[in-house]
Image (cartoon, rainbow, N blue to C red; front, side, top):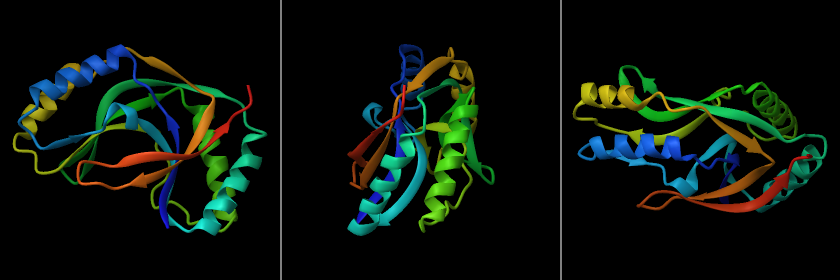
Length: 186
């Protein structure tokens, strides 16, 4: 069994990298798990533990699916949080101008569910996770620092492919290993 997910790779531009570097520097005393640069991605669908037969079926479905799908773009905007109750859990970069991306994700979800795979627990919300947080000592400071740097210049992201990844969980953080690349039409 492999723990797999479907995603779009995202390489941050210098403006976003700089904002994140400044936030990390000012919050280094906090227990924050930062996403490594090489792991930045936008998740389209998380499948979880998947056996070899289901993986092969999925690859076949995706090979057919991308034949009709064109390349697209979206923009990365400002930093924000996902909360659970009052607790800040995830720091992310919001995704803007994402109509085509949302359309792609919706089509994928219909195909995936109709093909017998589980429906995701949460509806699709386009975002790029930057960090995960637990037990923040100084929530006010965290909020103030992120507010200070949240207005990064917009960055356009060109999407020419989607990637099926295996997620290998390790104590130092997950390792994402590409299983298959699916090129979108130009």
